[in-house]
Length: 115
Image (cartoon, one colour):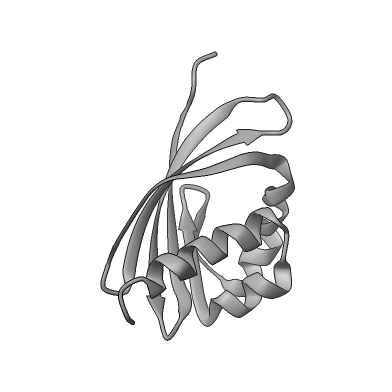
């Protein structure tokens, strides 16, 4: 994967998630995609859309703060605000890409910001 393509792919994923563009996101994720978080252990693409996708409408004010890429991998840190209570928090994510698709996302939950 050429330099820059990973960053573009990662940015496209977040844009699809927060604009609720499911068809766009499905195209960005590989058929053998896995998602891992403290609440999900290597779930597949179908399960991701059942368990995680609905959360996009519970979050607002997405801000990509850091994006580092090396080869076909990237780390990001972002800030979002929960719609329910206005609490802001940051997460970090590791993404692995291949053939212009994301094959793996691992999410690391961050702490909530103090008001």
